Image (cartoon, rainbow, N blue to C red):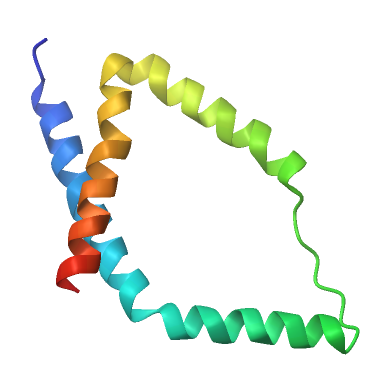
Length: 94
Protein backbone atom coordinates (compact mmCIF):
# COMPACT_ATOMS: atom_id res chain seq x y z
CA UNK A 1 0.00 0.00 0.00
CA UNK A 2 1.40 3.38 -1.00
CA UNK A 3 0.62 6.35 1.22
CA UNK A 4 0.19 9.59 -0.61
CA UNK A 5 1.47 12.88 0.72
CA UNK A 6 -2.09 13.87 1.62
CA UNK A 7 -2.47 10.71 3.70
CA UNK A 8 0.78 11.34 5.57
CA UNK A 9 -0.15 14.96 6.23
CA UNK A 10 -3.58 13.83 7.39
CA UNK A 11 -2.06 11.35 9.83
CA UNK A 12 0.33 13.97 11.21
CA UNK A 13 -2.53 16.45 11.61
CA UNK A 14 -4.57 13.82 13.44
CA UNK A 15 -1.69 13.16 15.83
CA UNK A 16 -1.35 16.90 16.48
CA UNK A 17 -5.12 17.27 16.88
CA UNK A 18 -5.25 14.40 19.35
CA UNK A 19 -2.29 15.86 21.26
CA UNK A 20 -3.93 19.28 21.57
CA UNK A 21 -7.26 17.70 22.47
CA UNK A 22 -5.57 15.62 25.16
CA UNK A 23 -3.98 18.70 26.69
CA UNK A 24 -7.30 20.53 26.59
CA UNK A 25 -9.08 17.62 28.27
CA UNK A 26 -6.49 17.41 31.01
CA UNK A 27 -6.67 21.15 31.66
CA UNK A 28 -10.47 21.35 31.41
CA UNK A 29 -11.67 18.58 33.72
CA UNK A 30 -12.65 20.98 36.51
CA UNK A 31 -14.48 23.16 33.99
CA UNK A 32 -16.44 20.15 32.70
CA UNK A 33 -17.41 19.20 36.25
CA UNK A 34 -18.69 22.73 36.88
CA UNK A 35 -20.67 22.70 33.62
CA UNK A 36 -22.33 19.41 34.59
CA UNK A 37 -23.15 20.77 38.04
CA UNK A 38 -24.60 23.90 36.44
CA UNK A 39 -26.78 21.86 34.09
CA UNK A 40 -27.99 19.67 36.95
CA UNK A 41 -28.78 22.72 39.05
CA UNK A 42 -30.63 24.36 36.15
CA UNK A 43 -32.65 21.18 35.64
CA UNK A 44 -33.35 20.98 39.37
CA UNK A 45 -34.78 24.49 39.54
CA UNK A 46 -36.95 23.83 36.51
CA UNK A 47 -35.20 25.46 33.59
CA UNK A 48 -35.82 23.62 30.34
CA UNK A 49 -32.59 22.86 28.49
CA UNK A 50 -33.19 21.55 24.98
CA UNK A 51 -30.94 18.65 24.05
CA UNK A 52 -30.73 16.75 20.83
CA UNK A 53 -31.55 13.13 21.20
CA UNK A 54 -29.16 10.39 20.18
CA UNK A 55 -31.70 9.28 17.58
CA UNK A 56 -31.25 12.64 15.80
CA UNK A 57 -27.47 12.68 15.88
CA UNK A 58 -26.52 9.05 15.17
CA UNK A 59 -27.72 8.77 11.52
CA UNK A 60 -25.89 11.99 10.65
CA UNK A 61 -22.64 10.72 12.20
CA UNK A 62 -22.93 7.40 10.35
CA UNK A 63 -23.57 9.17 7.03
CA UNK A 64 -20.52 11.41 7.52
CA UNK A 65 -18.31 8.41 8.36
CA UNK A 66 -19.54 6.49 5.31
CA UNK A 67 -18.85 9.50 3.09
CA UNK A 68 -15.34 9.96 4.48
CA UNK A 69 -14.60 6.23 4.20
CA UNK A 70 -15.67 6.19 0.55
CA UNK A 71 -13.28 9.06 -0.27
CA UNK A 72 -10.30 7.86 1.78
CA UNK A 73 -10.57 4.10 1.49
CA UNK A 74 -8.76 1.72 3.81
CA UNK A 75 -6.82 4.60 5.41
CA UNK A 76 -9.98 5.38 7.42
CA UNK A 77 -8.95 2.71 9.95
CA UNK A 78 -5.68 4.52 10.68
CA UNK A 79 -7.35 7.82 11.61
CA UNK A 80 -8.92 6.81 14.97
CA UNK A 81 -5.70 5.05 15.99
CA UNK A 82 -3.61 8.16 15.33
CA UNK A 83 -6.15 10.38 17.10
CA UNK A 84 -6.10 8.10 20.15
CA UNK A 85 -2.29 8.01 20.19
CA UNK A 86 -2.14 11.80 20.02
CA UNK A 87 -4.81 12.09 22.71
CA UNK A 88 -2.86 9.77 25.02
CA UNK A 89 0.34 11.75 24.42
CA UNK A 90 -1.51 14.98 25.20
CA UNK A 91 -2.87 13.59 28.44
CA UNK A 92 0.54 12.29 29.40
CA UNK A 93 2.55 15.40 28.52
CA UNK A 94 -0.11 18.06 29.28
